[in-house]
Image (cartoon, rainbow, N blue to C red):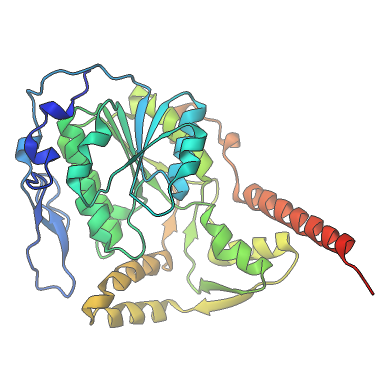
Length: 385
């Protein structure tokens, strides 16, 4: 398969003044309308988008230079999952290009690892095509920042990226989604993820969609560090169970799936070995840290009330959207799936998947050892008069 050069693309894609990728939101009688994909097959979602990009899905683009199957673009490369995907790809010999938004602090660590960094912004479609030249596979790990409107990057930006990928002949598209996103249309982020899945499926791209339940890395800042620093740990009174997975395992399984023809145009779900409640995670951290946690429990009813209250004000709509996701995480939902069939499909041994107990044990062992060493050094340098 050949790669498309910028010269062969329509000027609408490469010129900031004429965007072929545009969306027109139509107002709804709801307090906070989201965009709905009008693309065929996505009518089940409450996103209203008029996409004026038919001309970019081309079938007669001139052939360019053949691309190497090892050339990949990682979108969202500085995130919790994205950086592990980059690291794994480099370790396995891939030529890695990272799409990173212009930022005051450059992503020098990606360059130090051996990746190529290109600046682009999903919210500015005209910056995307140049990043895709010479690329075989796109791995999409990106998500919007907490301070941004959810639909800006996670919907509008993703639609622009997917359309550019289709127009430029990208041969594989890997998209990370959320487990059970199709069952919670009332949650903006999950609804957008489901709509994006549908949008990808309808483009004709060769794709693999991977739904995730939760990352072990997120538990460090949420529970482990506050317990060690004797600060409050926030939790809920809900019996939600989440099968957390190490992002390194997610990255490893992703590349195994990419090389497996049986995962072409398939939707997979990755889940950890066991689903945990918030209280079980806190108890495990307490045991490994050797000290009790100062737990502040937030009733689910308070989350629901706060979400409804923030809906009354336009400037707090984004807060309400994210509280909706928190509310789902604080319900009695189980974010887990049996993994036996997936392990068999990918040829992976379940014993090779890191457990949460082992992950947190390694973390606390390393941290407590460092704290002990620092304390010992401090005593050696003390001068008494």
